[in-house]
Image (cartoon, rainbow, N blue to C red; front, side, top):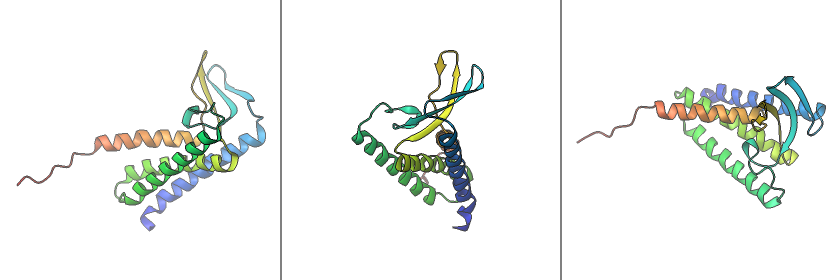
Length: 163
């Protein structure tokens, strides 16, 4: 467990950052209120996302859809925990990528369970084109997923011993 301590600390720090940023947004920004940070590029806009990452299924006001998304989130979280535990500490990049994904999944799962929706507030745009609003947890998941892909494709193929 000691060799996993830096990764667990990373997860804890990222979940704390995610939850602290959402707490500040909820306490200081009214739902759907928007503050311009970088004109023509970036706003802080508070929305509550009942859907999946980047707002997918967010218009579904159905309890069954919410329950299914929460269950799938918990299942994915459990699967990543399994791979995290099975990955040796020597595979640092893999552990970092899984740590990022775990932190993001946990941050959004906490929101889903406590608030009934995920708080999104980072709103990037150019002209009339808006990237779907997101949060720190979504960023962790995205960066972790890209890092995971990088690690997997960087690995040398395992060749069986010819006889």
